[in-house]
Image (cartoon, rainbow, N blue to C red):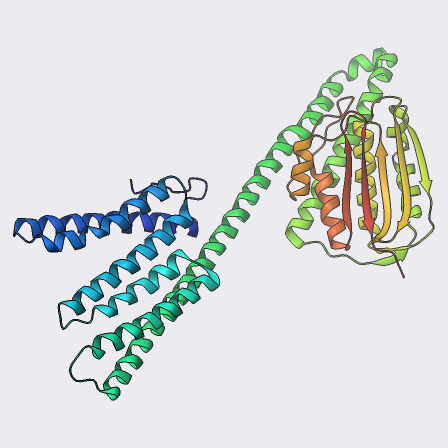
Length: 420
């Protein structure tokens, strides 16, 4: 019952703690109400149990609303019901001419308001409670035979001082608790990312690097056969070349990514034409393109200059082009274009591959490391390429835009600031 209405997806969050606190308060209040009623009935007092039973009208609906996850309704019901109950106790004590300061019980509402409500609502309700308490004090002493303004003024000052002290103390405690929970949540998220990174690195090392190295071992064991049959070596040569390219790219990405994690990314912007970098990348990837018989088209519609780190742009375009090559089938087409638009220079790489998986696209937009997939002819990768691209673009005040067309290809654009 204590867990009624709790949020299982955030068991240690501030919101969930408030829900559990209200459950416990309601259950304890119901138990106390029951004990008071039973006690008075045992001693033959029938009027008091009738008054106290009003507590059930506060507690039971509150627990019910919590259970059906109507959290705000449960809180307002509890606060309003508790206020009406205290008001009833106050007027009942005045009616009986009891010399008790039951109006001070309203102070209990101030911590409850701050615990269960946020923002201006909690402040406004606290002010109303303070005004209400002042009215109750005046009303009680207005009923007495001796009414001294000086005495009432002193009581009002005491009431306001005590109420404000409780309010500011509880408000400070609440803000400290919220801030502590935010820090814990952030640290927890960072630890989760670090754990994911650790698992990812071990997976890359155990699969994407060890697998090609095992293949090299196999080839070296065939050295004797290669000497006897050179044609056999030629048949293996293309596969060897592809594996060397794969493991080289994997190591490059791993080393650069590791450096960014340890030292952070620092951009050294300069002004240059992006077509210069595009031409360099097309030369470096010529063998990969030729091996898959891919048609590469370059459509540089602008000679405008960009303002960014040249080395970073080289890594960005290289990764995007190699990613396009990886997922473009034999005899496919890749188009590299550079267009000046209002928001900057758009350097786009468009392929005729299978398109990007929706989960990968979602993880990329969320800034997470994307899961590597096999290429059209079994190419392997780390999954770091697109993550690196996004990080480097962010450091150079750029953006990454993806147009995904499942089954027909992907167009990925790196948007960089134009040099003025």
